Length: 393
Image 1: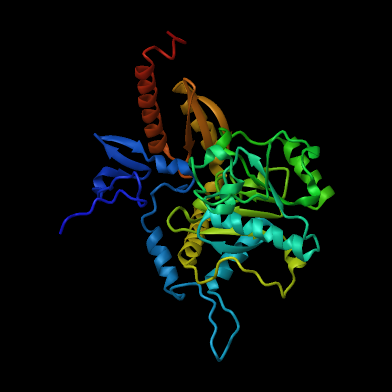
Image 2: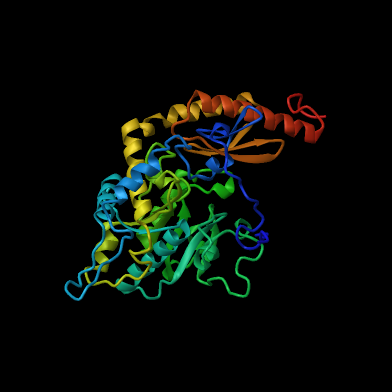
């Protein structure tokens, strides 16, 4: 049989990765010509433990043996009460404590979690008699996902050149810069403000305390909900499982994804506070995804990830990791253009690179980081044709 050439939508421009020899891999990447290379995939916010825990999948599989293959709401002619697996409630209870009183619902992608968050904000406005509040304020630059709604909320340059094709983007979005003023927007028509914990599209430059104070003021004055997209910055990168916990604001709704499962299985979560819970009431009909959407593997994975974080006390070490990473970057002549928690944007010769330091980074990791940066520096000098240390041509 002729072997097909799969260069279509999936996997688009990628090429096949052959099965690697285990001797050519290590905890944070792969080995090439006897050199340890840090896998760039670690920098995209998912794998906060690297690949160090091969028993992770076994532990999740063992946990899943006690539940049905999916997290289905079971309805029968005998008992029509919707049911969910016990692990769904176990994780919800843990997250309620960790978050300080937020309830949750689950999805499989960050895009879906953010879309659910915006819909929930709209639902809140509707049940509280504010049907006229239909618009979303989002920050530029920002990125919130690839669905029609979340793409419409994104910074144009963060998306592919033609993300909507023949469709029209959602028209109820008002994009503003971080230095916007209260008078720039008619808040009477706004349901929520959607903002990232920290915009990675702006070199990972944190928002100021004044910015968050402005959002708090607008919420109190204009009955606008604050929705924080914590997908990229949550999961332990700031010394807390919830990335925004160190900010001078508490959102009404927030979302998580990526690293919350250790990167092993897909799951995203939308959290909402008690104000929304009470406003919606017990008879509210919520329609966003279904509990038989195969979330159980991600739910069990998140429970396992939280267990490892607690057992190994990994969140206690983030300040030391930041200090060590900063030293390695600067000693290799890279400037730090922006940082939030363990997320760094480093720069050399006007070119930016994104790095995320794993929570369990050790001497072996930092030795490899040092080596990789030296190679990157040498490559930059060869391309430029002059010494960067000497300060120019």
